[in-house]
Length: 363
Image (tube, rainbow, N blue to C red):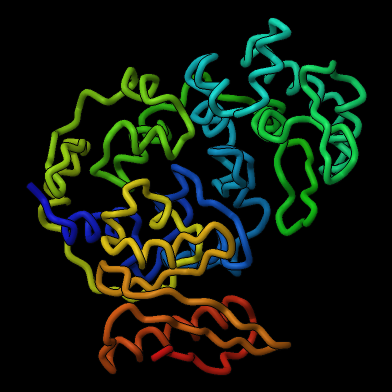
């Protein structure tokens, strides 16, 4: 049996949130992918894990639509292996991942994986130079048949279903240009998909390594995959542990790390940081009211991590070349903890290349 504190400390250590410095090669979260959503997205997640972000270039990182169709950062050198890792497990899995797009394809007798392959071939033919997503979508809508298309009422136009479009992009060997909005797609130079992902990039193993202990359902929810597909590929080298009475699995190699994990670190986690992506939210935030505050339907805040526990939320307030950070504590914070949070706010301001105008702690 392990308690919530052990689980949280284990994840802090596994995700290297308590280290002072590191390189891309030894940054573990890049094996699973670092979601790049919002201003304080993927590169901030790397910065708080000790990576020298200003020294990085497009030659180091690659941005791909992968897990749940979200944009994720990876090491550029790993692109071919990542493409193999994020492949749907089966046609049924592909159907679940593309959501409502699966129904018209089924009605037309088109298999889900075949549909993704067809879209990938068309995307590869269309994107011969950098192209804005909207232009790619329009071109694609002109060459694919009706089962791939939907009428969009807000736009009063016919588009591709969004999720097949996104998931087919990696199959086509396309990346997203960093810092473009709307996204610009272009071909990945010298791209070849690997035959297999291997243990390091296997998504199930990576989830257990970084967000364990976990159940097959929690991993399936993270991937948007059917639970039975995840169960069929569950690693054999796992041990069972009880977390608040729930049986979960952990890679056997990490058992000692779970038992001995301890950490003392303060971090301002971005709203989509991997630490907050775990699908056992009641473990991360046991109080349901606090959980609603951290994961609202719209407009997520970031989370304040102190010594392995989430102790509040934070939001940036930028005005010109200055930044204020508004912190909503969930408990009384010591003077030392407040000083540590201010230090992290200064780190955020430096990352954004602005001056820190202050940190407001709500009563």
